[in-house]
Picture (cartoon, one colour):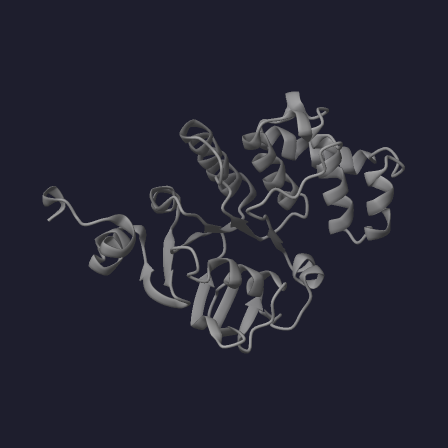
Length: 260
């Protein structure tokens, strides 16, 4: 019996004759940060699709909080404590930062019918409970001063934080973050990494992080899984992954003399 909060076991996904995932397994313990790395086409986004319910595997199972959710909808997984961001920003330019968080808070509580009313400004003022929850997220992410600005007027780095805030609005137990630093400069990446550490500690939320920035993953994660051509080629702690010769050759570059 495992104590994993999120567990994928022997996942296989085929697209026609192409095997996108070939027997992939992944475990996420409560309150952990798990990194998922690999080159383009390795299967990272496909695995996220399976974990979040957007894709159904040909075989294998997904368990969330002790429940088999292999064939469950994304909505059911959300109710069980799973949230996700996407590599491409999925934001509404005319809505403010606060609006995004209020809408996400309402949808996470099954008030889906208000979604389109919110988008056109007819959803009504936030309740005291909504205000309290949203203000806590704004403070956590350092967005209080930008709360009433339309996101179209804000830089990409802030948009990434809004996506994290929207994922937090459902009070998840585990968040899937898909390339959260994509398009960011080094300073913005460092700021986002610090914010993720703060979110992880203060919200006691597990994080699964897909990133091309391997050094960022190794700095943040408790455990790392490396994919290549749909297969797991290495799993372990950041130190183990950094010391794996196959991973060094494929992803981190050849070890220097100082490392030998």
